[in-house]
Amino acid sequence: MIKKVLKETLMVIVPLVILSLLVDWNKGSLRFLRPFGNPDHVTISIILGAVLGIANLRAMIWGLESMLGAQQASAKLVFLSLLRLFILFIIIIALAALQFINFLGLLAGMTVVFIFLIKEGLKMAQEQ
Image 1: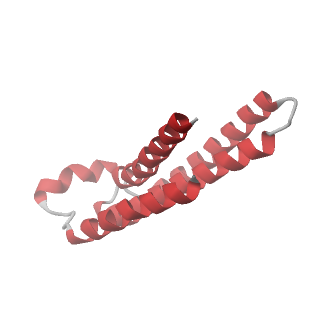
Image 2 (image 1 turned 180 degrees about the horizontal axis):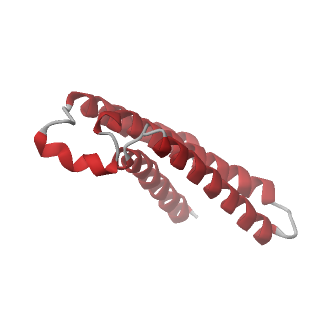
């Protein structure tokens, strides 16, 4: 499943990144992006959003696989989920503190991964 999500994500992220390279983010009509971070970093933020989304997916799968057969699976699941979200939060805060990201670009990259994850999950649920 993860390979299919990765492949579909790349098929959308690559054109999105190319398109974002063609846009002059400092034009007057795009100044609304300034409160969300440096507009010059939209392209890298899209890439980082996709990378963080895929890493989060891999961590979630790793956590679920490590729990199989465990007696206290629910407590372990809660701990691993909170740990994963904490690490994701720290990475985003660090990148924001360094003024290295644009939050809308980061959101765009993560949303692409999320959409394909939901699509594949629904497809797998229908097959069962």
